[in-house]
Image (cartoon, rainbow, N blue to C red):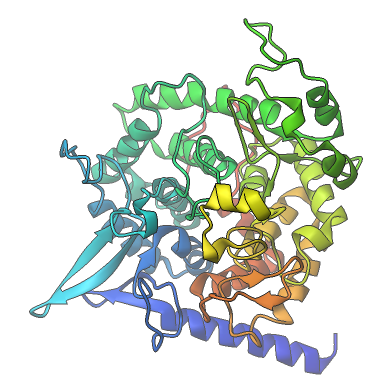
Length: 471
């Protein structure tokens, strides 16, 4: 690498860090999070909010740089926003929820935090992923600081238990996944992912793993037992029923429908004619595979959803063979999934009548834009983490090279449009904080592979004491 190129890359990193610094928000004089857009001269509906999911890459960067205070403050203050009892009012957040976002408000010189649990959001969808990300981030904080006593505080143990009780509650459905409405996660606009979307199942599994380590204090045995019971069931269900490769595709192709009883080979009554075999049989490489977007009654969503698949690798929801197969698929279908800006949030996009039916004719989610096949630079850090976990560092290096050639020049946009990701998103916000942090975090994971330990998990073993007792 030439001195000139090294200088350019150093300047790029410096600019990115400066933008991250500008995004930090303060509450009563101390740092508490980052706003959605680094450029505070911009204004918008929620530009001044700190979103829980958005803050995660920022928080991981701060932990890597030893700036633990901002993450600690974030965890403490967001926990205070968690409702501790039910109000028996359908329009108020239920016990255990963590808000989608918050902002600092000042009235007569007195600062307070105003939380949004989805009641102000577009479509008014409750954010299911916030509480899952909160637990995963708490786990990362304890790993980075080795401050187990922080998580052992009664309010934190109670906060985790309330989230677990919410997630593990008895419902009408009888399966190990988490049932959620459409738009309850990063894809927060209608995209036909209601039911059991992969992204939520991957985060749910990661949050269960983190909770298992964090619930240390006496009196939590009942919840820990419930987690121990759920983890292998969830893992095995996803690995078996969500997995798509040429072998499973051949089995699905020959499914018999309307089967009854415990011996049914097609338990979800998937109708084979609903699967686009002609396209899938060509697109799937011989040694590639991935987790479906959703599996439910008569439904197999065969779209590739990046965050769910990458997070499944990171938290060992997939086994080693499946993890390698996902990375094989990404590498062999690079132009479709990565293209000119890492990477597609989902593939393929919904088009024509499907687009109209699934999205409700959402003008922002036209084909190959935004959540409907758009390219999201924040996914770069998930790709880098999955590449490190599987030993496929060539993939992360290649993706980072693509990103650093464009992001700064394009003013760090929220997302990109077109089949290749060559166009800056039509409605994309510039200087998006998690675009900046996704880039920086990916580079940190490549430079320092040991940081992967903050966010990843190994294979779950019920025989081992999977807690933080030894730190």
